Length: 457
Image (cartoon, rainbow, N blue to C red; front, side):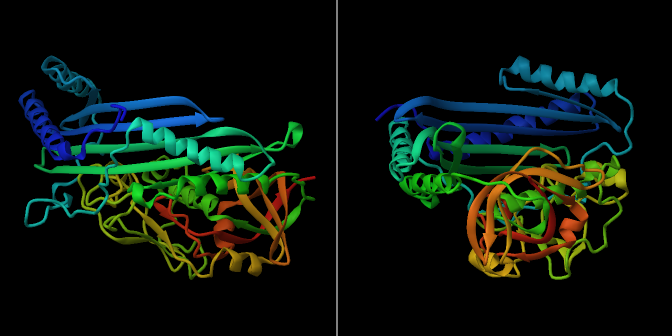
């Protein structure tokens, strides 16, 4: 067995303990230098990543990274510094640098730690709830190479039209982190993530098409079989051969589950605190207003056991809680950390660092049911470009997928653009399927929009 492998899971708690002690020392040093408030983030990440192409190993990478970030406040003046060097003189210099920066910055009325009363509280045993996100994989280099080769080989052998490969890859990673602040809050977290993927090329010359598939999970036991991933990559790739364009017009558009979450991503960008206090959002001042159909719900589930983004506290130590972002089509709240909340005259929503496990309510059946319900229209399986105006909500992106007739896939299409305004797109959603793509912390099935502009020939 090759020696390159992830660190044993047995020492993860000891490593977290060391990070916790380090964070406390840095907080004490910041206080000694005159900081009125301080916060420290410490992290360690280990990983093994292997890629192969055409039956040969291309890269093998074993990583172990760490980072320490220190932020201090002198009243409402803020300074931050970071290091990856654990030598005592480097740590001392990092705190000193953060303090020096703070002394020479201007007051910011929104600066400071999140309010102490909002900090997450541990359970009676002194620990935060176990959310089942730690599943280390004792994966060594030889085994990783074998899995990646098997994945690619299955894809290349699945169909004679597969002419080439962009390769297969496998990655496994562990993350340990501690966040502590001068309110007395200390939060420790550890999580894992594992991924296998394959990308293939079918056809020749101008007729070549590329596609792929991947599986990702907290536990390697939940990954799809490598050979099955390769075969699915092949199936998706050959299905795109001999695409056509479409005549420009307005049609129903079905976003497959893996691209539907991009629509939710645009919503999150528009209701995030940074965009709102900069007045760079098309949903400015829309809290309490209906922006989706009245059956549409999005709920945040930060304490979901085994969720891809589960946590009892956010990046500022604020307790997370289950809550609706959208209820009955109405925007219930924004997505805020403490700084953006103060800028807006509101309270943090426990989303410093992002959202945790969004779940979009389905009102329809599976993928085939959505196709049948649409009958005729465009299925989008890939989006290209960044044609979204965050201020106006105007939306225009390159797309590829399949034309649908009589509720069934008729032929592949590419070289088209889909366009509209996000407010109209959100309001025009007719169905959300139950075919949720579980590879993201945004849980959503395919989304059917009643009508969009499709620009082709």
